[in-house]
Image (cartoon, rainbow, N blue to C red; front, side, top):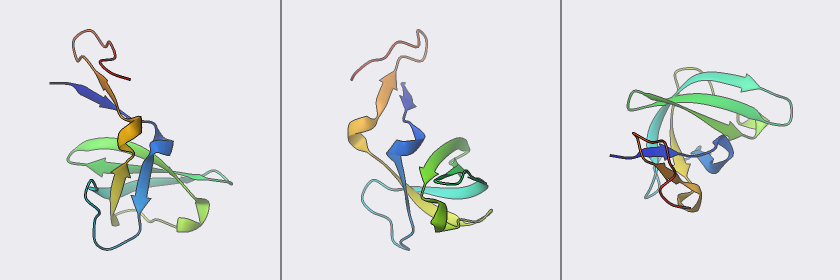
Length: 87
């Protein structure tokens, strides 16, 4: 087992109906409009994640979307020690 870490700016929300190869099905929980950007809180398989999106996407509570993590930005951690496993 590993813990996966990724920053909100490295999760790309897809507005397309069909997912891409590495897309994760996500449901919108909360949208925080911050002016120049929005933080969208999603649920993916019972886990809560946050993505940073453009403010004009206008995602709404309860909507289903896909999130695509940037594979080159994913960090892996040891669940017991919390130490990072790779860069």
